[in-house]
Image (cartoon, rainbow, N blue to C red; front, side):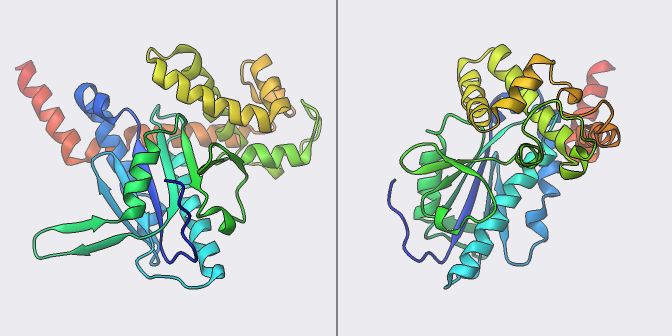
Length: 288
């Protein structure tokens, strides 16, 4: 699993929705919501990438091979941002994912009646993802030379943890002591309320979730962010994750309201899907 592809021509983003089996058995409305969110991902709109969704797994890769480092950097950049896009959309939904970005051989084609996809990178990503006790994105060593825009920290011998909540980085670059009195802090990180909601939910999971395995994944994720942004997380933790622990009261007022609107939108997004309508019909029959 430690093999690094030399001059890779293909890159694969492998995403696994965590807790999908339990959701399928207990909360199929949430399953409908997840699929509706996945259907809107930016990855579907980009002509240089193709996305496959099956059950609780999302695969995004470049169909056309690349042969220079500039293109490799471009692919790693966009594939990381596709994971970041899903991260944004799942804020406040109590839905979590673990993803692996890896370079290597991957094949995908269609026959008359079936769709075929296989390859060494897919097998490696599948096996590795199950052994990474974390939430978010891990980048394989094969991709690290081409990463230009995301902060990373070593996770194990093969993978590095990727900081998808980049708003913390923006605030830390602007101010070192909190709460800062500078109103401009909101201009430097307008999506900061989203990062705070994310890390507050991670903290809640690691302290309160019934399943030890979930608590362990959340704890590892919290630990990475706490090591990189100790002052910010300490201030938030001491003030019940209130935004005025970081900046002036009301600095992110409009952004906070926009976040609440976004969370409400994604909570309703699956209500018109065939699965949701089927559930409504079943519920109606049972009440007769």
